[in-house]
Length: 168
Image (cartoon, rainbow, N blue to C red):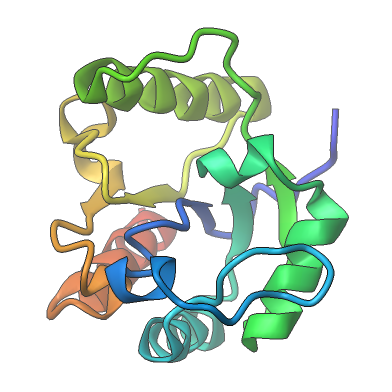
């Protein structure tokens, strides 16, 4: 098991619809070696502001965990100008389905399993899949995949959840 600093706030991070918006999926620009599309520059700016204010541990919950290693994800973060690294991935689920509802429940279960195994108390999951019914107050929904994390109010919700948990 990877050692993570559970005294720090933790963000379970999705990529598509959070850092990479709809406009990036269609771009012809890709990473020279890893063949992935770039993240949205404004989303990166917002994410970096969260990192600067909160200094969280980043755990990747995105399906990108199926395509890239942790070292490759950190190279992708660097290439996109993100000022932190991915510390770990949630476990890769074995059941994949195209049902969005099932995907939401599976991703929430992966996150909750990780939280339980590592005894994490201060976390937030940020995703464009609506997992609120399973993650309750530890979830921020990026409802507009064309805006991602730069959507009005999202940054503040993330920071407020993590700061509230610090003060408990």
